[in-house]
Image 1 (cartoon, rainbow, N blue to C red):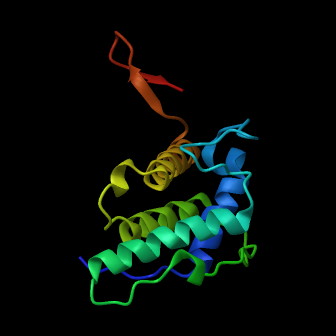
Image 2 (image 1 turned 90 degrees about the horizontal axis):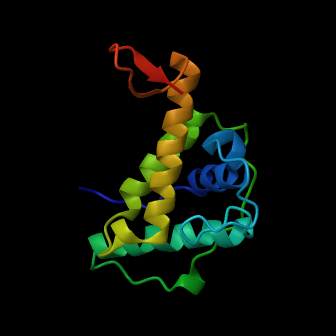
Amino acid sequence: MSCYIVSDATIDVLVYAARHDAKYMGIQHLHGYELHGLSPWMDADKLGHKLKVQNYASYEHRYPDHRKTQPEEITYVYSEPKHEPTRGDVYGCARCYDYQACETDGYESSDISQWIDTLVAAVASKEFEANYGGITWGMNSDGTPNML
């Protein structure tokens, strides 16, 4: 498996989605709530920096001969995406980021991994609902889908 440092534009989409959670995640009241330790209302630069630091750690774990980059050497300044990201954009950026950031030991149980998993699941759910008219939530006793 290869690994690379994702673009700041990829991080920007993830931060944008976190800051506009109701649209992308279908969660209405995250103000002040820390989702897996990452507050969507935290400073955009800090959230992006935290994501970027994990990406660098993953890259350096995968390629141990690469010079180790200290967190304070990693820069990130949030920029609004050039166009409003679709749920598909958010989904793709989150999946890409997760793949590039997963190399470190313990990543799967980290705050970042749990946050990305939550974002991916929510965005996929909302996209499915938008395109297919609802989400099956079990089956009724007559065999028809129970729709949300």
